[in-house]
Image 1: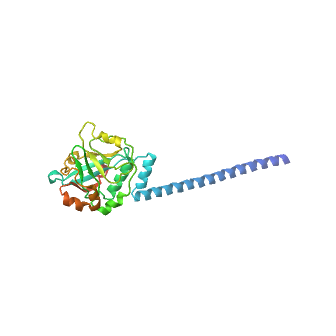
Image 2 (image 1 turned 30 degrees about the horizontal axis):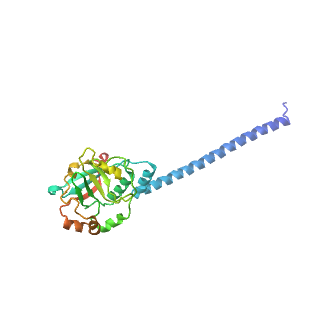
Image 3 (image 1 turned 135 degrees about the vertical axis):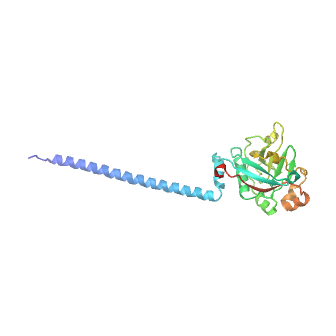
Length: 258
C-alpha cells in the first residue's frame, strides 16, 4: 500500500492552488480586454455619428478641420451658366477648385455655391486682357449677411495665370464674396498680383472662350458702393448689358452618369 505523506498532500495543494490562480488571472484579463474593446467600439460609433451629423450639416466643419490639419480633400467642378454675353448669347463655364492651393478660399467658395449665392450675380467689373470680376449679390439683404464674414488669407501657392480664379480683397484677411477670373494672355499672366497676396483657389477648365465673351463695354464704371446698397435694381437700370450668372451648380460626377 502506497503511503501518502503530509508533504505530498501539501505539494499537490500548492499545485492546485497555482493552477486555480492562473485560471482566475486569465479570466480577469479576458474580462478586462472585453471591457476595453467595448469602450473602443462605443468611441468609434460616437465618432461615426459625429461625422455623419457633420456631413448632414454640409461638411463645413470637416472642411475647416481638413484645412487646419493639412488633410486637403479633392476639389469640385462647378458649372456656371452665363447669360447676356456679347451678342446676347448664353454659355457655360466650368471652374474646378484646388484646395491644395487655397483651402480657406475653396471652403468659402463652396459655401457660396451651396447657398445659391451666385444666381443672378452680375459681372460688374470687366477689364479686357486683365480680369472679369463678380460676386456682389443682386439682393442687398443677402449681400449684407456675407459682408461681415471675412475669411483669413491663404498663402499664395500658385500664380495668377490666365484662367485662374481668385478672391478680390481690400487688404489682409478681408476676402468675402467677390472673385475674379484672370484673363491676361501675357506670358506671365497677372503674376504681379502674387506678391500682393492674391491667392488663386481654382481655374477655368472649360469655357474660357465664354469668359472672353463676357460683356466688357462698361469697364469699371459700375460703382461697388451702389451695388452693395441697391443691388441689381441699380445695375439693371444703369448697366443693362452686363453679363450675369443664371445658375451655378456642381458638375455631376462621371461615375454617377448613366
